[in-house]
Length: 186
Image 1 (tube, rainbow, N blue to C red):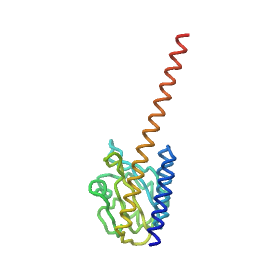
Image 2 (image 1 turned 45 degrees about the vertical axis):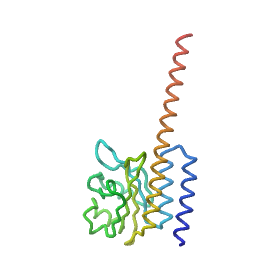
Image 3 (image 1 turned 120 degrees about the vertical axis):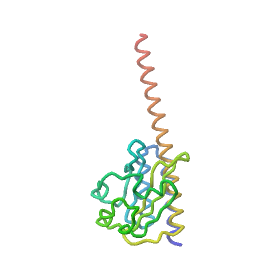
Image 4 (image 1 turned 30 degrees about the vertical axis):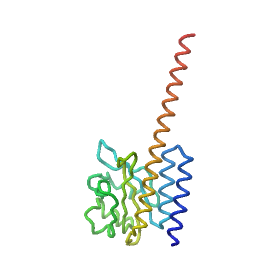
């Protein structure tokens, strides 16, 4: 019950912050910290799919070492790929699961279990949100639902922040062109 209350508080905190932020980087940084803290997990990371390379690019992380994050390219086709195509995937033991691309590095980092859920925007999978635990963890349905909700909120927030940034950039370009046009007519 205590964790459920914390999860609701986290949902409120994150949605409030997201509704005030127009910076995609700020959105993902705040989300990974809040999710990891709420669950009492070792860490959390958000990865975005690079469609050209089919790799997962790190967007934000909390609680994970630079060495672990820099372990090598993460293939969207090899690294817990089912979570991108089929939905949440919970891995109880990273040292003994073929879906883990870098099991030795995960063990060295002190990671025991991982929950990976798709990050969705406008009905399209744009990446993955992953929770890392230092102890073996049987993720409950409540855990999975909470992380899925956070991933959906974060995906929507990222998309809105990107649109805002694109609109803002377009307005600046138009202002610049208008200013140049007025300067030429003088």
